[in-house]
Length: 229
Image (tube, rainbow, N blue to C red):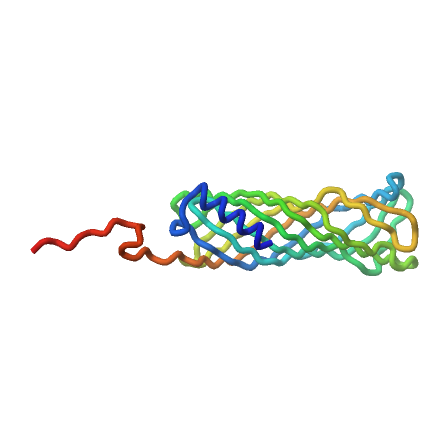
């Protein structure tokens, strides 16, 4: 993760300016997650739809802000409890289980500076997510119990409010998803494929580390000779 962060920071510095013009930042985040009804296709033939309750997300992120651009690394956890499994001629209520994910993303965000305390922003991210799928059904017991890593991506849109020069509050909508995943059904030879697609509303509190002020002779500004008496 730190190697990825270093690549982003070096890229940002090369394109947009020196470290003296930029700010490092860290922050925590939390919010609501909605998981779409998920058609689980078993062995590519039979399909059943897993449905989930509203869930939550939480995470941390840190990055490098230079001008209107932000380059960051983000860890997030999302969880939604299982509700039921519905097929063409059956509907079985869940007795337990959930679908949750741990993700590590690299994000690029652009802030539209309008001269007001509130600024909109858009962005995108790519990375990897470990998705866990666990489902217990009434009368059947444990049906699904799997996890694996898969490529993930997200789109970001939101607003930022400056509480102080060092503290900001972000309100984001994030669409987070993975490409198709394949899981095995315990104690059988069957496999099923599923997509992990979520809607997320996220609140983040961000702290900026301001760069030190330039010192005389550092090269940041020309030295001005003292006035002649």
